[in-house]
Structure formats: structure tokens, C-alpha cells
Length: 329
Image 1 (cartoon, rainbow, N blue to C red):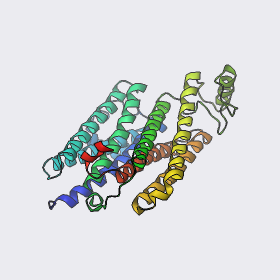
Image 2 (cartoon, one colour):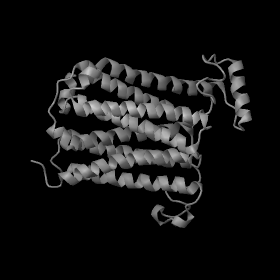
Image 3 (cartoon, one colour):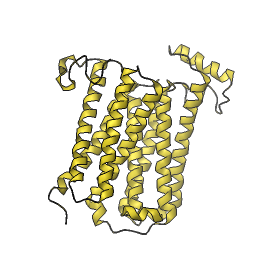
Image 4 (cartoon, rainbow, N blue to C red):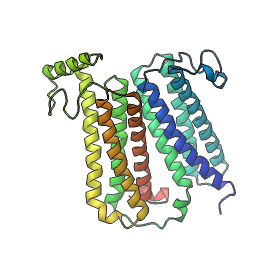
């Protein structure tokens, strides 16, 4: 029998999930507007305690950077309460440990965010900061699903090992693609290939001096910084990753469509994946065509996180309910 606090713990877990997604969007806005150093000190804001900083002074880049810090603190508070609540609950040990892991991850995430500011936005630290955000987001989803009514009331269907492993592989590809996206954003490679669907005026990139010259001429006309061939390669790999992710999802749909129809929840979850990946692919193209419009680029990041989230949920829904049974997959 569940404790009387269980419904509110479930609600808190869901609130943490959606708050984290919003936090990722807020963080993307900071990078997209290039205002990461608009608040040059940490953990204070211009020498003041974070929540004591006047709202009237939150203007320009300060609005995005300070707002991001405030949202991050709130998410951290939710995670701390969730971890403590889980610790005193009757939930299984693995779920309690996951709550502690989530708390440790969000603390580490905050520290990397501070280090990013104190050391003037070093790319490796910023990339790790972005990767931790996506990892933490996945963890919150697993916790929320572990506490959900659905998990306890679900009639388990015996899915084939190919469907279960395929779902995990699909989510893994999305996770890797988001890492590549973080690498691209924090190495100033977002406009390293400024045309779409062609690349440096070519359908098949050669990565030659001619291609690089074509790109830099275009960037010069756009009044943007020149790029190196390394940045071009990073950008191309991210585009290639988008094709691989989209192709993997398309293959999964073609291969298992008739099978996943037997569970409506799984069926609609997968169509959610299809809808989000199409939106994400479109946003990626529009980001380039709008010369990396800050809001479009930020929606692209948030939609990528949403894709990872729904892939995580899909993997949970086709895999065993009990954690101990995952070993037999």
C-alpha cells in the first residue's frame, strides 16, 4: 500500500521534469544570445545574493543569464526535496538511489555552470555543462516514471528483445546527437556551414580549401567570423547525426509499426517521437537559414531535449516494469 504522501511525490517528480525542460530552454537562450558573461560573478549576481538582485535591473543579457540561474536554483530545490522525500518513503532502494543520483547531478551541473563563468566560458566546461543537463533530464524522467500510477497499473506486454533494445539504441543515438550539438554550439561552429541543404555550395562536402573558401566568403557577406575546417567538420558531423537519428526512427517505424500498435500508449508515444523529430529536423534547417536566430536556435535545443525525453519514456514503456528484470533483456 502506498503512503498518503505518494500522490504529491508523484506530482513533484513531474514538476521537476517539466521544470528541467524549461531550464534547458533558458540555458539555450543564454548561449544563443551569447550573454554567458553578462553576470561576471558567481554565485552572487553583481555582489548580491541571487534572489535579492532587483528585478528592475534584469535587463539585456542580465535578464537571460540571471534568469537562468534563478530557474536552475529552483530546479535544484525541487530535486533536493524529491531526494529527501524519496529517502523517507517506502519506495524501492533503486528509486531512492536514483533520487540521490539526480541530486548529485544537479549539484555538479550547478558547479560546472559557475566554473563556466569564473573561467570565462571555456568550451570543454561549457560542453560538459550541456551534457550534464541532458543526463539530469533523463534521470528525472526515469524517477517520474518509477513513481507513476501507469507503472504500477500497467499490464505488461512481452515485447521482443529487438523492440526493447531498438528503443534503447534509438535513445542512445539521440543522446549522442545532443552531445554533438553541444560541441557545435560551444566551438562556435553553429554557422560553420551557412547554407542548407547544400554545404559550402556543394551537395557532397569535400572539406577542401575550395569549400572552406566558399563558406568564408559567404560568412564575410553575412558579417560573421571566419571559420576553420575543423569547425566545418564539427558542423557536418552534427548534420550527419541528424540524418542518422531520423533514419533510425524511420526504420524503427517501418520495421515494428504493426507490432507496437497492440499497445495504444506505446503506439502514441512513438508517434510523438516521429512528430518531435520532424519538428527538430525542421528547426535545425531553419536555424541555419535564419542565420542562427537566437529563439529558433534555442527552440532547437529544447526540442532536442524533448526528443531525448520522449525516447527515454518510450524505452521505459517497452521494457520490463521491474528494474531487476532489465538484466535479462
